[in-house]
Amino acid sequence: MDGDLTVEILKQIRDGITTMREEFNQRLDQTNQRLERVEQGLLDLGQFMRQIALDQARHERFHLEGQVGGR
Image 1 (tube, rainbow, N blue to C red):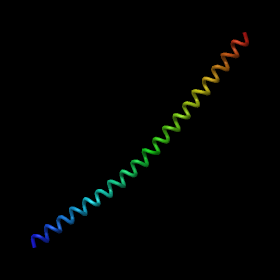
Image 2 (cartoon, rainbow, N blue to C red; image 1 turned 60 degrees about the vertical axis):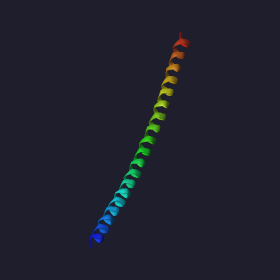
Image 3 (cartoon, rainbow, N blue to C red; image 1 turned 90 degrees about the vertical axis):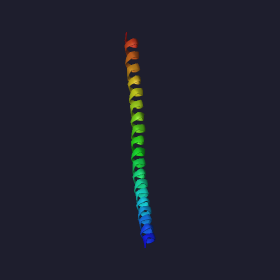
Image 4 (spheres, rainbow, N blue to C red; image 1 turned 120 degrees about the horizontal axis):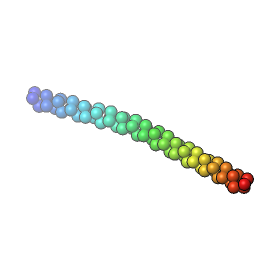
């Protein structure tokens, strides 16, 4: 009888650990998906900022050349 109780307790512990592992894996997958979206957003933002910097530099060169050529 005591053996049956011990076996039942061990089964419940095993089931609890299995459930916790599944929940952890699910949360880990969700976190990875969020991080991938954040990473992609940061990459897009970096490309956008780089393009703005290139456009600004081209704009400044255009005006500098216009000032030098206009004198």
